[in-house]
Image 1: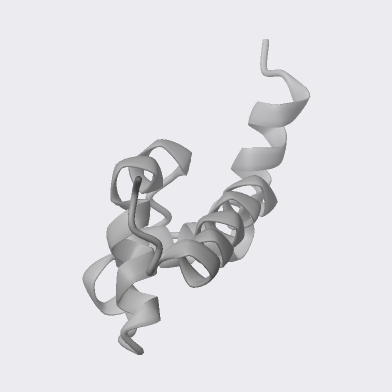
Image 2: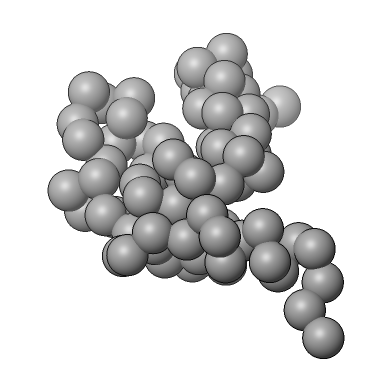
Length: 77
């Protein structure tokens, strides 16, 4: 039996969507492209599609992007 989350993900799915798991290992690269002013959807089209339709992954992305903007130039102690 399908749970509500699985049904919600199925209904939001778009062709080419890489899914939640695909974005996790490349999120740092995705954000770095954005910070350099490049379009990450050219290199990671499936993740770009997914970020448009998945509020949870979009929130994660936005958090990583904000942290990179605030602390990207900070050197570790």
